[in-house]
Image 1 (tube, one colour):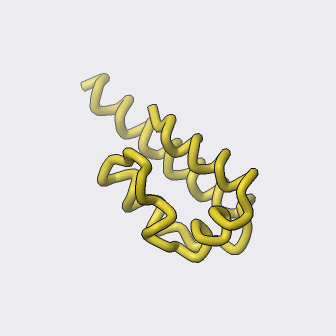
Image 2 (spheres, rainbow, N blue to C red):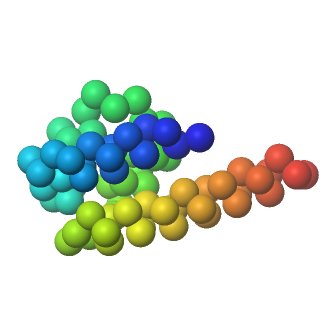
Length: 75
């Protein structure tokens, strides 16, 4: 679940140009990644000045999404 998001974070860590595009919320930075609508919306909503902040916000979203998914499966 959310493997593509992990790939995006990894790419941003090793590629400074991609990292800058991602942090500046460039839609072009996400082109080519097979994201769900929800994942794309979550990334677009992140306002971060560093990869650490970006990763923390993304982790929070993934945790909330997993909890919601778990709750809906348990019903």
